Length: 292
Image 1 (cartoon, rainbow, N blue to C red):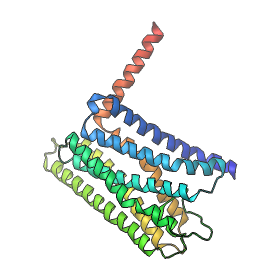
Image 2: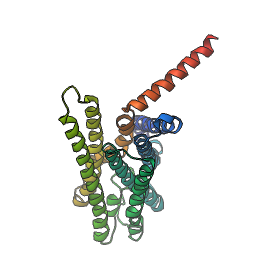
Image 3: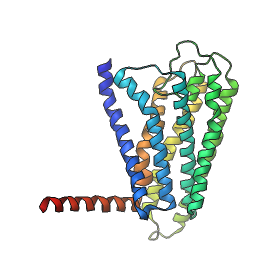
Image 4: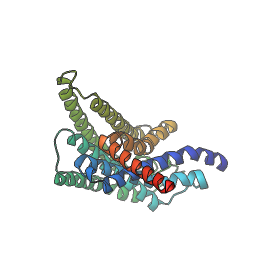
């Protein structure tokens, strides 16, 4: 079994490494390149930081299963992991809203800081009670989670006490917060699309439309996976669709950190230009050292 897990772990490790490298590279570029010190790039960097946190939150438990066949996790460690996963997901949702807002109006650095702080405060305050709810419940039975990481609705299903209030609270947070964010994002993009379509055929920026379409695809993957997973865990307790849980869970926490640097950031002309400039300069400098 361990040998099989080692082989299965290879694509997971490659995906995680790609996500880590892409997000770290973006953070470094925004930090060192003066031309990238503007609102949209700051939001991209914050998105990369959030994705980096999500990847690092689930990597230890996932790789422990594949590499060391470790299928146990302490309650405190599980609650800590769960808190970071849900909080960072909420922060990411707020950043996606801010990025959609930035495409409608010009934001100042102060506004960027306020929107980023609001996303962080919202995620932290709304989801802070979740670990305390779970800490008060006794757990019984097999205590087998449906994922390779700790997820709040999944853990509620293992509690041996009435969890109606905790379940309603968690689901309300997801549906109210994330549904509101989804509506705002789509309204913003519809306004952008309407503005572009009003232009003449020759004046339309088709590349911008393509970029917006890519952004909407990643937004759909993020929100559909997150909301569907939260709802399924509460209404399919009798016969849990493990394959469906695993697919959505991986799309939610594995594919998004991988896709965001490519779609939201590396498709940016400024970031592409910065990559070409710095990469070409390093190549030229390297060849000059060799030739001399």
